[in-house]
Length: 196
Image 1 (cartoon, rainbow, N blue to C red):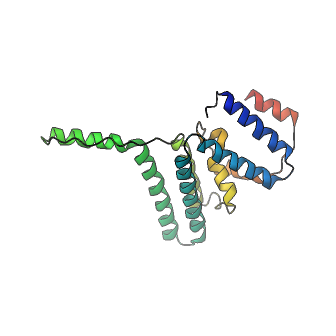
Image 2: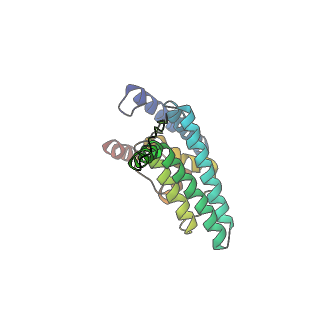
Image 3: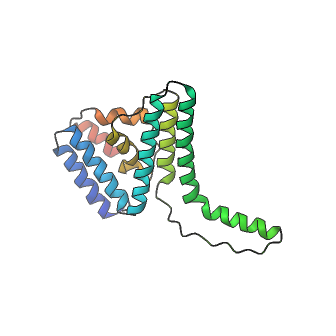
């Protein structure tokens, strides 16, 4: 679903209307979370599962990191989070590049090889949500923020559909406090949002 399509305009208008009709903040969070997963899954449901699973792992790494008092345990959790995120990014974005480079290096050394090209579908926005997750775990490691205890809030931070595939990269300390804050309709803020 592209941002410039009628389908997205209808999707956005529906979610926007439902969000302001619903009076309960907790239900609004779940509405946005379900809409965000549906938005990503409309493109590819398996890659939506990858985003959800990697986000779940980052949530658990950060929660574990928050439990450790000594630096070694915190470093281990940060290292696991970084390794997982960067490995996923490298696999999806660079696996075929590395295979071609290896093939070229072997050919330059005199070996005649033909490595297969992998059929890898690049997840939309993988760089955005990977670097958001990394910035979050680094902030938790440095104790700039505490690990988010509410799983749905953390998933919404990573999966929020208006910025999931096009950015910008948002800091957890800016986004997460807004999720739980109660919101009221305000025409001046709506006007500002439309201008943006």
